[in-house]
Amino acid sequence: MLVKNHMASVLQVGNRIISNDQIFPLLKQYGMVPQLVREIIIDDAIANITLSQEESTKAYNQFYQGNQLSSDADLEGWLAARNLSREHLDYLVTRNPKLEKFKENTWGNKLESYFVQRKSKLDKVIYSLIRVKDIGIAQELYFRIQEGEQSFDEIAREYSEGQEANTGGLLGPVELSVPHPTLSNLLSSNPPGKLLPPTRVGDWIVIVRLETFLPAQLDEQIKSRLLNELLESWLQNQLKEFFAQETSRAIESEQPI
Image (cartoon, rainbow, N blue to C red):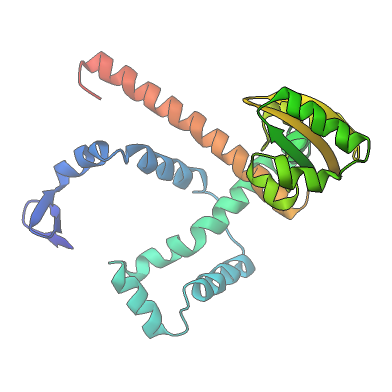
């Protein structure tokens, strides 16, 4: 709970009373300063972002629905449970919509070129895989499939040493960034249906066949994901710059960070 005395506001947690000048050292102790700085950077970034009446109404409706608030009593209870007042409400409701608008305003016109850069890792594949430890066994299994003696499914279920044995070797759809880089390269550089000879991938000898290639599209889901990536990259750079400046100031003043 938050209490006040004649000197300063303090935070009381159980029997422990924490003064204002103890807050920041505790944030550092608990490793929470980067998150605090991150949120302040976001607040500064969206300070000049405004929402239209329609956008604001939509934000409030989503907030009420998301928190299952259908009356003023529900809202008052929700705020009280979090030690918040109505003054905090507009900030809470509009912050994320403003952040979405900031992302769109800042990087929306760069999405297509960024998508082209990322596309090779966003494309998805469905593939069949057999993995064993012994190259001799791998060669024998490969020739059995190639000659039609047994199906890929049958051999995967009987011989593959990974969880893919449960699905007859079939895996996916997964993005090409998910498999081992060597396997990802095999899948991206060969046509569907081609049985590839045994290849070492990490500790395994694998036999792989691409079944289906699913090219990524710049739809709303991918667009949102890429905007979040660009935001995160920007935030990380801002944080690095902030802490570099803090380190420099600490060295100059010979004070610990």
